[in-house]
Image (cartoon, rainbow, N blue to C red; front, side):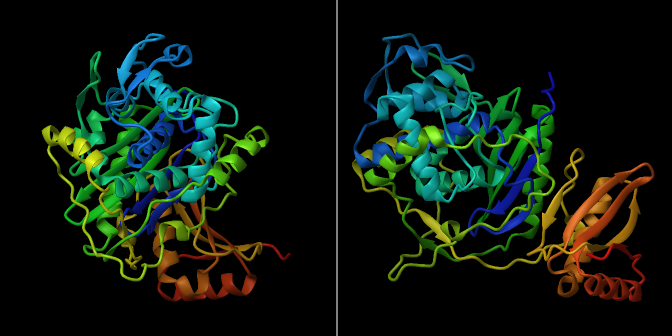
Length: 444
């Protein structure tokens, strides 16, 4: 059954470098649904590493966790179950009761764990995210973005590679039941896919943060607001395809430390929790997403050791890997220095059939002039032409905003936010190459 219409957002990047290949409403705060559980699970991995808790810690289930609505493992108040089973249920089945129980086991209450979630989000550079619960059920003031969830997914992969394989399991023993992966259709259908997390509520639509690795290249793509599982998977596949087409085959990998949250950070976030703003949960065509910040592109530390992330661990080896991680120092997290990769405009993503989307090439001067490239039979064709022109004329269109406008006769491709001189020069250069171009706009 198709979900209610929900705002759409998308983001795709090279997981190794943080280089962005495509973004659409990527910084618009929206309902993350069960993508939230990535942060819950991330903090559980961190707590294990720090010795706060172990995989074999027996957790007593609080009533608040047992009362959560589906998807559920079926936990009962007062029941005792090992943490390892709760992690499997939360990661694989996306069980709300299991995710809530994890938060209680680590921090003692929903409020305390939410403060920990928000402090970690700040440390990661998730600038448009605020959590109020552990599972992602719709709640006022609980929101995130496609960009922020991609950042979180990237940290999940590189900060805890010894645990990441859990997300590729098609089934898992959750102690009281064998559970199936909510993402198994995509995992089975897309070459190299190994995670990460699905999410669905009526308010959010069908969400997914996905990662796939082919050779040395790893791509992360995020979709918010799919209309069905099939629609979401099709969109994410096209994003990943584009990422693999554009990413460099090789990149230098350097070790970096995972983000750190101090006791002072927790106290500060907890003190400000009640004052957290309620984010708009609607697309904003005027919102322009920016680049990944330095938290995703750190400079190499002196003496850093070059490492490679090992993938492809077999399912039967996962349990041993998890157990060994408790007794041994954590594997070094990995990061990669940013490298440039040219985008082939002929392979631009075919996305976004609903909202009008504005995407920044760089900084807009706020001018009221632009250029029109003509009318196209589809949004995809218009978007593809805009990318081609923007890349070909980057010197004159630096600062322009791509805009696709649906009209009765088709889809107009415009680049706005230019001065009159910039628009005039761009059109003259394009016309000299037999490309249709008309100036549009008025004087300020």
